[in-house]
Length: 194
Image (cartoon, rainbow, N blue to C red; front, side, top):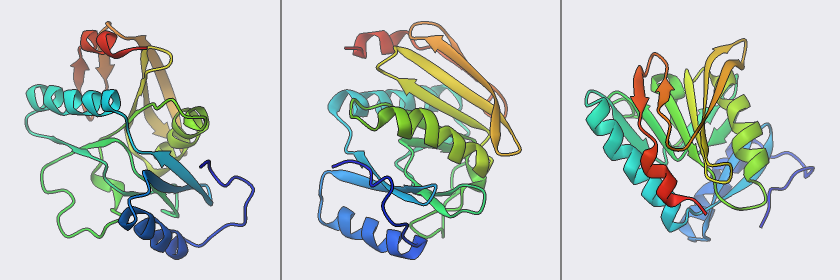
């Protein structure tokens, strides 16, 4: 199943009902709604899950005052009309208590995506997600790009666009700017490449 690009737009409310049905039916996909279009995100493979778990442990040691939440549903884009499910989000503990399924992203300091090997990865993770997260004002976006064997750090959103992007090969330290303020050792990622 691929994204329904060019199909008629659906309302946010229609999308939320559709996403809930897809989740309940365990179709093996997650639905997202970015730039007015429904997109399909495949359920992660084992290596993808290992990377997210590794990041959770790494962040717990690096930044014990923050939590790395996995698969948090977020309202994205400038007017919160989009819906995305980042692989992980970094925020203070308790930031999402009392929030509905699709959460307000204001507490998010960092959004993380780990690429998959499906046909929509480039459009979704390298084009649409940086645009949606910057528009939303998420300060830092970390893309763990398994295909290109690198981490890309997008930061400093200005007028809905990340003004900085730095690509670092797996194995080199990755600086995550404020408000994260940490250096990620990526040597481990070299073991999980194709």
